[in-house]
Amino acid sequence: MLDIIHQYWLLFLIGSYPNGPLGGIAATVLLSVIGIGLAFPLSVLLALAQLSPYKALRYPATAIRYLLRSIPLVMLIFGAYFIVPIILGRPVAGFTTMAVTLVIFQSVYLAEIVRAGIESLPKGQAEAAAALGMGYWTRTRKIILPQALTNMLPSMVGQFVTTIKDTSLGYVIGVNELTYAANQVNSAVITQPFTVFLVLSLAYFVICFALTQAARLLEAHLERRNSRTVTHVTLNAQNAPAAGHSS
Amino acid sequence: MSFLTEYGIVLLQGLAITLALSMSSWLLSFAVGLFLTLVRMTKIRAIEWAVLAFVEYQRNVPPLVHIFLWYFGVSSILPENLQELVNEYHGEFIFAVIAIGLYYGAYFAEDIRSGLRSIPKGQQEAARAIGLSYAGAMRRVILPQALRVSIPPLLSNTVMLVKTTSLAMVIGVMELTYATKDVASSTFRIFETYAISTALYVVVALTLLFIGGWLGQRVRIKGR
Image (tube, rainbow over all chains, first blue to last red):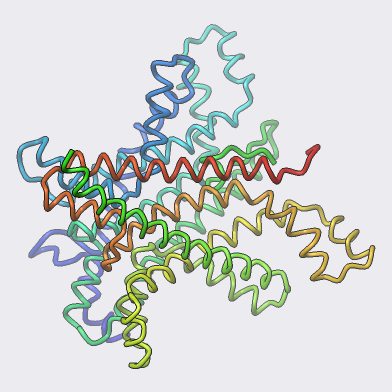
């Protein structure tokens, strides 16, 4: 195991970078950051549309939510892989396809978190802001979102972990990332598939576990802070989406 | 129309395998989840620690990597006669079930545990006070209440599980996504093929949500 790490650590870390496309852990992290970073503004708009009093906004946004949440990411990746080049009329790099797909996919899931964050705020906040004469955008930007987003931070870190795990699917369309690098190593070593894939899973574990723990610390910190103030908001990323809780 | 009659059947066969894969993995997940939760309640340090390590490992590694590790890795270190046996009975299907089943087993364990934690301690104490054994109290008093509370999170993870079975295509299980890709690349009717498969996945997901909602209503304890 150690000799494989010793021999191929650079391939695991950055792929064949100076001589080829960026790959390995670096590409995985880059894809995830792009995915979640660009998905975030979209998700706020999507969440606001889902909560909008206007049917013309609410219905399409809700339809997108149900549609994208019920198809697997792999299907979406393959769909984008085949369809985007036809629409654009020119070939598109796997990395770009993957990034675009991730942004679309994650914005829907992030929107669930944003929506839960907004809904968990006491109604009085929006009403008080309206009573002070603020318009919709002012009160959303200055009153609602700042409070909702702070409470949502732990869930968003959790979603970032999910995104990192999702980037592994880039493998199916040949994107150079960590899983792809491990398969390259596997075909170079040939005789030890178990060790190679064990190293791969440990690499993902170290990255994701560190972030998961960070999210937990953050959650505990926010909980302590919230219990000191009047508003007490608890968010649960896992259970918030899909069917509403009634327990 | 000829497209539908000719290739619709291929997609439906894919759907059938997706459903078979989902059901097998679900059963494994539920068994693993329940087992982990119960074992963790024994309050023995070493066991608790082992369960925690297992759950964290499963949840922090992508399902695709789990599938690779089982299909390419574990299968290569099995004894030879076992390897042959597994390969004879669709090894890719079996390893996909194990990988996905264990992955969601960890999630299910958390869902069930959160249900257990929502049951007041008095329930256990009262059950013991009227003479039930620990196991009896668990089976007749605590679990029936806890599993009801766990239905919504279990449901959303079940929908996720069905979607995750699509990853089995990378090791050659001919489920719906595999069939879709196959039909799309052999007929070049890309839009139609993806539209049909998307519709099939949406139907499966909505059916699950509907059944789950109905089940939640059905087993609800009156007056709560």
